[in-house]
Length: 74
Image 1: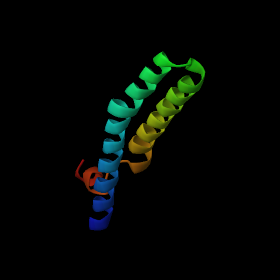
Image 2: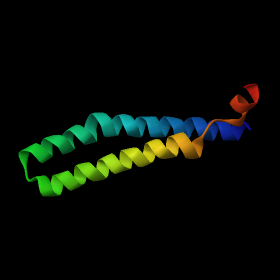
Image 3: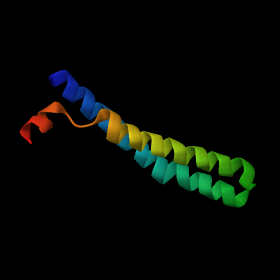
């Protein structure tokens, strides 16, 4: 159980760091690039970033779930 919670905490921190990186770095750069240059290439890049963000949120909420210890306490 100890190793599972360590894995869960590390995975959660990595996903949160990735989301912060996506929201504050990648998405604004993509949006700025889409404004400055052609919408065809950078619009696709922005769309892929939004899909990646949605996939990470889905994995965080459904696959990782909640540690078993918290489920037993409820």
